[in-house]
Image 1 (cartoon, rainbow, N blue to C red):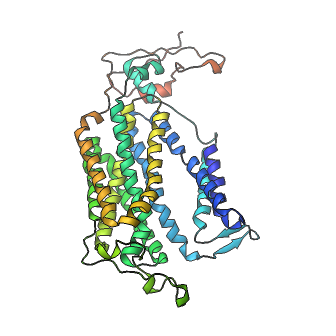
Image 2 (image 1 turned 90 degrees about the vertical axis):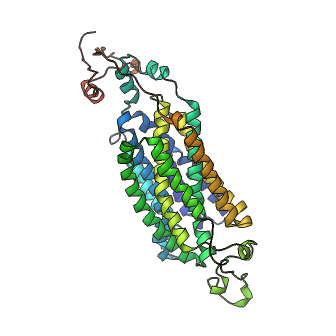
Image 3 (image 1 turned 135 degrees about the vertical axis):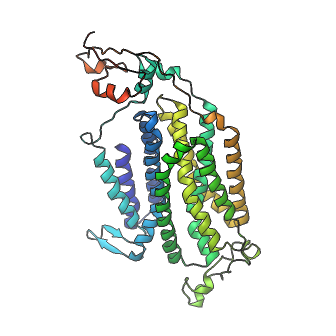
Length: 434
């Protein structure tokens, strides 16, 4: 709830930058920093999800959380396109204290949604239920959740392999998200408004494709092993999508003239549209065709949801029933690092060296990652949990009067017994005897 409150304040500050007369850039950096810090709560969500679901429920639950995250990435630019008609000036409300235009409207939408999230996490609405460790404890006939998860040693090599794969996958998606507007303006000679509008349409369609993909992930994992769906359904489509972005157009992109203020022409004039003269590679490389862009974007819209969902699912299962806050934080950190490197990569590679280097490098990165996953796919199999072959009698302990002394060996009530004892070889018999 602290992170949600911080996100609300930071989003409001970012949307109110027009009210800052001095040091605007520092206020902007501060607001963006706070937004980034508060967004780290996704690690807490993933950690709690791993603790609050059974193994049989994990794939579906993770896919729903990943769906929400991916839809956020995709719908975000779509919202930008939706508010573009507000224009640069937009509306001024609250006696000049609230500016709503094409640049600030998305921030105000964030404020409203984060306030809704804050309300939904109030104690009288949201209650925690952690059952993953207890499920394994019951299956093995143990009496201590802590001892149970400590006895299961995760494969750290597999965990780090999945963290690196997550970094590569998110980096490639974020790169396309970051580069999309600039790339379409350079390759197709679109104006800034046209680029925002059409990218918004592409993102909206991609959101629908991603939604269908998320629904199909669980049925596919029932037919094939999760690791194979990850490799051949997620990474392979992302590899093909990156390769398709290597241009093969018949001629270079339209060259834009350097902007000349004395010419008394608008910056949206056709002579100023196209690949800018500051990018030396423009006259020497073929243009990306619109067909390539659409097909590559569609493949990314299918491959990324599959990859990001199953990486998190397998990662959670590989770690076992232990508390996963630190490890989920590491995975979230890898995703944040990829989001930081995306704009840096665009500035250092795309603007200086062009499309061949940009998409050639990312294609090689994806291919190497896919080969590595293929070679280590046996290590991605989660550890098996041996079930008892006999009936287990788990007696309920008396609850102490002082609830603060309750520990991990707290009693299991009849509702939890019914939830956990689904296996035919496990039967829990609650008893009132000490």
